[in-house]
Every structure is written in C-alpha cells, then in structure tokens.
Length: 335
View (cartoon, rainbow, N blue to C red):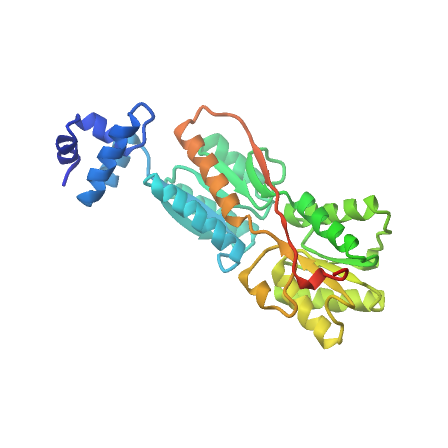
C-alpha cells in the first residue's frame, strides 16, 4: 500500500493525501479523517527516510532527563512520547544522570542524530552550551523541571512556589505551629522555589522561620532518612509538622519517625510533593499534591511541536502548572 493507493481510494490527489497525512491545516476535516481512516485500515506505513530527505527533517525529537526511574520523569516521558507519536515523530531519550558534563554529552548526541527539537529536564548549569546550540543549530528547545542559568527559553514547570505554599498553609490550618522542611537542593529551581513557597506561607501566618527547622536532601529516600534524623536532632523532637520536597524523601522520613516512635499525624503531621500510587499504602496514607506530571509533559510537547512547525515563532513562554491538595490521614489533626 502506497500513498498513491491511498489517494486513489479516497478520490483525491497524492498531494492532498500527503498534506492530510502530515496534518496540514488547509485540508478539510472530513477529507483528512477519510484519508487517515483508509491509511489505518490498510496498515499504511509512511517511508520516514524518504519523507525526511524531502522535508529536511528527521521526524524525531530528543528528550533529556536525569533519571527515568524517577516516576515524575517517567510520566513526563510517556506524555511526550504519546503526543509526538500522534504526529508521526519518534522520541529519542537520553539520560544525564543529573551531571552537567553528561547533560552536555546527551545534547551533543541528539544533535548528531539531527533531531528536530529537544525537551530538556536540565540540571540548570548548562546555559553556555545551550546558547551555542540555539545560536548555531537553530533548534527548538523547551526546558522542564528546572530553569537554565543565564538563559531565556521556553519553560514548563510545576508552580513550585505556589504548590509549596499550599502544603504549608494546610499544615498550619491543621494546627501545626512548629513546621520543618526537608528541601531539595537550592541550586535547582524546583528546590529553591519550594523553599521560597514555604517561607512565604510561614511569614504570612506569622510563624518564625528557624534555620534549625530546614534541612536539605537530594530527592532520594536515603537523603530523606538523613534529613529527618538531622531535623529531630536539631529541634529536640519539638516539631509538629514536616513537609518533604518530594515523596521519595517522605518515604525516608516515615521510616525514621516510626523508629523514633513518633506517631503520624498526632505527634507530627507530614505532607509532600508528588502523588505516587504507593503513598496510599503508607500508614497513614500521605497527604500530597495532585499529579501534574502528564500535564507538564503534554504542555512541553505541544510547545515544542508548535516551534517545529512555526520556526519563526520567537515568543518565549514560561508555563507554571498548579496542583491541588490531595488530603489524606497523615495531616488530619483537626478531624
């Protein structure tokens, strides 16, 4: 089955069939649907290599993430893959392992494969290399998860400050007055803005921010354990609430609180970012923020696709995605 065959069955020209298959806006909706249904019925597979040569495109995009075993990046990656698959693109995934040098290697590798655009979950410190890419290669770029230092580009992020503010106010509304924070690294936008949201809420309700009430982790279970031990040591177990920067650090926090015979939420109410499925199985279930991973992935994909299709689009958009509270028993002190 060739494109010519599809055109003959649909009663249109090869040009019309081709434009319909490539989602051109000047083709009537009914015509496009007819051609796509015929193609699907006859299992038509376009010749991507020939198409790429004709249009000077690879019909692939690159995705760089620190770690695909992290559920957030997994959900984001699936949403990006599914969006571009609908438009005939493949997604090439590369891992930076959270290292600047590896991130640069990943970007160079994707450029060598001549991808049509890149979505980058950056470590934040590769701005100089990205400036070169944008200037010399003229390739569309959308950044997620963190802001790139010293570079203005299209960005899709959690509204980290607002979301952290939401968690902190919730603990306050549940009667917590000595609230601790297990923060992510302040060198990363996500960690810094969650820290800022915590401070904003504490100042707004008139609670003192004690430096002993804030410790820093690196998003892992192990660092959550270490940070919780440090918090308890620094505060003499006077805390009545703790916010963890993500659910993995919250898992480490749970184990330490259990070891110290501190009951959740009667002794300490706890909440975190991320709404992993496993948080429902914790005892008690963990209060979190609603999942926006797939939303972030789809918004980043849509923006990149627009930039690929409209290379003259020079607008730089920062899209912040708000979450909602998912209240569970780990914070319900007033019920």
